[in-house]
Length: 231
Image 1 (cartoon, rainbow, N blue to C red):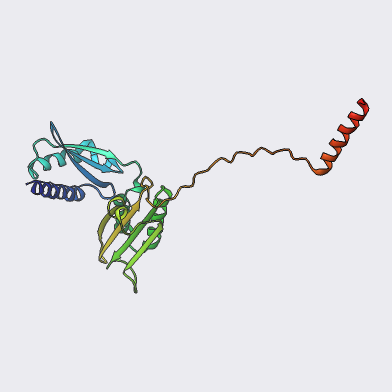
Image 2 (tube, rainbow, N blue to C red; image 1 turned 135 degrees about the vertical axis):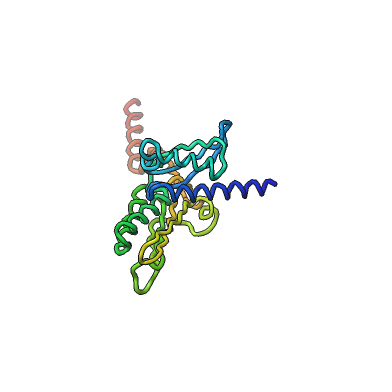
């Protein structure tokens, strides 16, 4: 029974996310969260441009609330908008920006767009990033897949499976479909193989006074002379 409820919840969240991604303006939507509250279900929309998501006088929020009540059978849905602190570290925002650029200006300058987006991600503080542009719409005679990568990015293990942020967006162009896949290793992730060197303070050693043979002879002579004077 628990497995069925989890699967049902995931399917419902996926359908809502697909609907929201189609209804909201492009290049402004990242992800949604579904939370249960005593008053009803809360839908949190994470975005880098909250003004476009809300719409004029809250028109987009009102439309979403009505659709969630009727189509998805929610009793009291509450739609909230959460702004992303750094869009360049969010893979969905980066992929949506590339898609919107392709749809506006075409994929001819996809190389400069890929390198430029990658540089923005690294300048934002990412440990590693990778952007893959592939599909029939890519203007190339030899290769249909281009990979732009920088920094350190894990390809296997727990860090790759659970810590790296991933996003996949498809742009439907006249020349064909183009897929944009973005992987980012954010700066807050601590890698297990990272080595830190501890700096130990070296205390200055006390120099012991050592007398040479000549100094010992002179001191012995002086002592003998003093004794002779006394006698």
